[in-house]
Image (cartoon, rainbow, N blue to C red; front, side, top):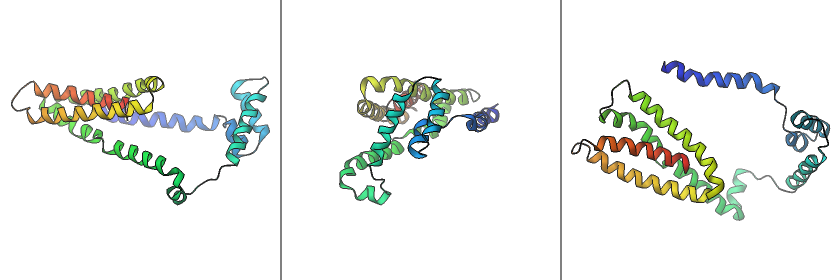
Length: 201
């Protein structure tokens, strides 16, 4: 069953590959990048139906005017530009912490934790699937929370809760041979870590 489950992602990619040529080009792409106003109008009519869409075209023209005045920077120019220094530092920090936050270690060692928690061998892949489902659902939840609380609150809250969970998980894994219930507590912490990862970073 698992090979079929893994291959199912290829089916969605194939459907996308086959249907992609039939999708219309973006009106803003046609007008800003290609400079083809007639094709832009045609794409707008195809997307939004017949009618007067001059207001939308005017908005795209304003956007085109705004982008025309901005200079495209190369990578080295971005690094040297002093006005972009703090944005670059923040971006690098966020991306680095995202890679080093521990989610890969959790996924790698979760099978061993589930095995130590005395789960039946045939159940462990389904529990692992549940962990992935948790991440998917928490990412969907994040899209509703981000408008209410903002990105900064979710990042700080997510990382703080993940640090707390990792500290508790280290403790439960160290004490799992002394107390039998620590195994189950470790499993709960793994699920919580994945939820906080999906909501935060």
